[in-house]
Picture 1 (spheres, one colour):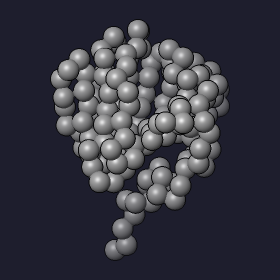
Picture 2 (cartoon, helix red, strand yellow; picture 1 turned 180 degrees about the horizontal axis):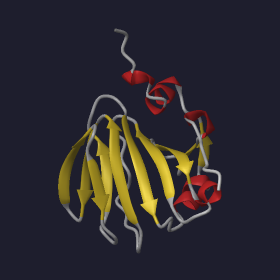
Picture 3 (tube, one colour; picture 1 turned 45 degrees about the vertical axis):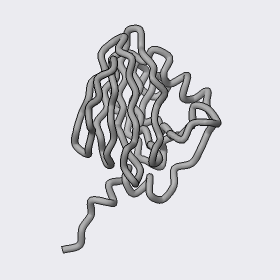
Picture 4 (cartoon, rainbow, N blue to C red; picture 1 turned 90 degrees about the vertical axis):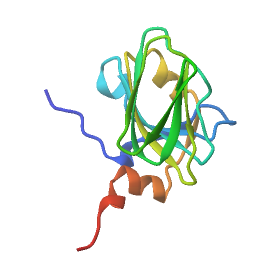
Length: 145
């Protein structure tokens, strides 16, 4: 089998609704992976947050790539910073909020998909800007010696 390889220029980005400040860049989903998972990068503008929600049978994991925020699950708040991971349990009512002055970037993995990618793709297509591409391409980590 040949593995599926993508780069940030291949990611499709969406806002779930016109009122959302968050953008989700799909890395892999059932359409590209041929299996029931969704991997995306969620980009939170300052003050942006996901509405409190839950999943009936899917686990959702976030790995913070850049920025700071707060995760809330079933009323418990946990601070988040770059390098942190958080696993949201099935049926836990949860949300994430950007508490920093810059954008918050989080790698999000949901298994199984539980119609997550369909929700994202049913939203409003949007573009990734220069800052997003620098983060997703890890150009921000390049330092001249």
